[in-house]
Amino acid sequence: MRDTLVLNASFEPLSTVTLNRAVVLVLTDKAVVEQAHPELKMRAAAVELPVPRVIRLCRYVRVPFRRHAPWSRRGVLIRDRNKCAYCGRRATTVDHVVPRAQGGGDTWLNTVASCAADNHRKADRTPEQAGMPLLFEPFVPTPSDAMLFALAADDRSALPEWLTQSVAA
Image (cartoon, rainbow, N blue to C red; front, side, top):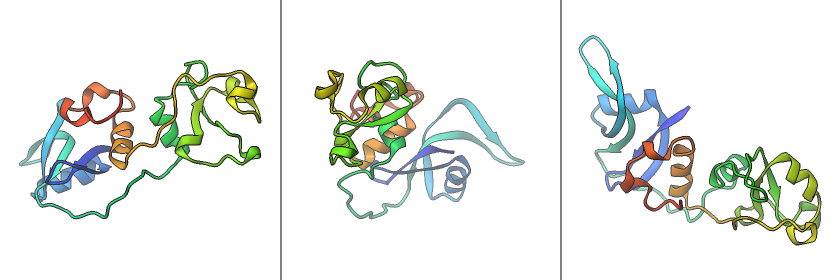
């Protein structure tokens, strides 16, 4: 499970890593802990370390610019916070706003999270044809937002306020 956010030296989100990888980066002085789990500590023979939730690299890493986060079914569910776009209940599937049978594709703007009942009821129709208006409009998250959405999917209050200000509420 990737549950530790890695920030560049400039505080921009880079990626998420496993807890073990985060601890190795901190112990080898390649990163510092910016935020730790409040009451958890990792102990070894000669070392006690807070369990990192957010770490920052000590040296700046140049990364190629990516304008959009790659589309995925899991990403759509996380972006929509597992809420059905038609009724607001818990979503378990992804629905195409313009069905694939009518030329719609797997894109951020054409997919929304949906409960199985509404996905089945809408079938191969657009929301207008089915009389099922969307409760919210789909959007394209930035790569940074996609990472923060994934980390904050369970508990948004666990991340620092300065880090979540750019993420839509």
